[in-house]
Amino acid sequence: MPRPIQALIHAAALRHNLARATAAAPDSRVFAVVKAEAYGHGIERVFDALRGADGFALLELGDAERLRRLDWRGPILLLEGAFEPRDLELCSRLGLWHVIHREAQIDWLAMHKTHQPHRVFLKMNSGMNRLGFTPSAFRSAWARLNALPQVEEITLMTHFADADQGAPGLEASLKRFREATHDLPGERTLANSAATLAQPGPSALTPPGGEPQVAADWVRAGIMVYGSAPDFPARGIDQWDLQPTMTLRAELIATQSLQPGDSVGYGSRFTAEAPMRIGIVACGYADGYPRHAPTGTPVLVDGVRTRLVGRVSMDMLAVDLTPVPQAQPGSEATLWGRGPRGSVLPIDEVAHAAGTVGYELMCALPPRVPVRVEE
Ligand SMILES: *Cc1c(COP(=O)(O)O)cnc(C)c1O
Figure 1 (cartoon, rainbow, N blue to C red):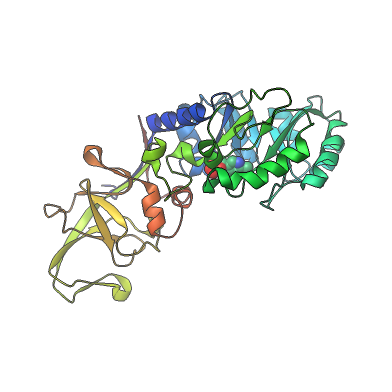
Figure 2: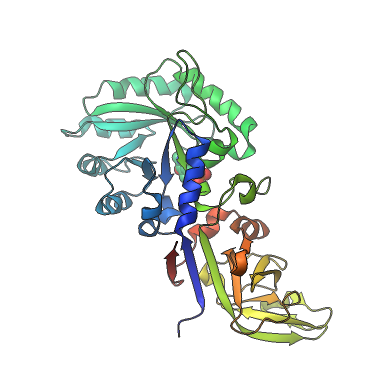
């Protein structure tokens, strides 16, 4: 019998969440961001549910090849562009769109021999100081690209540092972007999930002389598609009408009865103050559960909310069975996602308790956990 742990990918939830991105940016096209193995879900596993997107955005060239092998003929954007000159050969061959964020990438393009002029996304550093041209260097980069026969179309792009703060977090970056680009032609893409949700509404239909709105021509929806709220704990998935797309579930493989003074797990980090039952769950940090999750982190047992107790070990963790006295070995433990009888434990709550974000937990699903896709 296989070890009783499993991850489920919920296809209908992926479709629902993608539709939420479309609804929040009704006049924009939507890139579904599938970097990091579709945020841990697996590119092949999400592809069918997300093929309604207008394009896919990712980082690795190998992943772009996988999408083409799935017969995806639509847009694919490389969010960090080429890493070395020969990457451009694959861009030409597969018709990939790619980000240009530094001068060397323009040099490589200028030397690249192709019959297929490229669509490039010129990235501005609007305050995050990670990738992109500063506002003052942006126009000369644009002019260089515009003069290249290898370039067919230039889309203007930036990425917000503080979009999870809501609309006020966008203002400074948006102002820098607009000032540096207002008279440049071309489509625009600015918004990740947080910005798309923070400033929903019509966008690409910018009036002549008007300023592009946040959703602009393309939004780049990542985390919202995977059922995590970009601004948790200010808001959760319920408030954004998003659904969990990944469930991590396991079973109890033992129970223990504790007397006052008995402790649990490595380091004896939890000590019972009264008689209590605990359940031992077949899930540990080698299954992607965060080792730093403290006592009190929510867990569902048979769909009933309870708490983690003691330290998470490699293959197991312990839960308080006080609210679920009927629980036995074989009872279902939901570490995040959907539990029995309509119960839900948002991944954001678990991440928050462990001092991290839903992104990190879903991306860390390891190969030893079997995965099943269901409707
Ligand atoms: C990852 C990424 C996104 C998606 O961000 P979410 O917060 O997951 O929506 C958008 N744009 C760029 C450039 C990215 O790297």
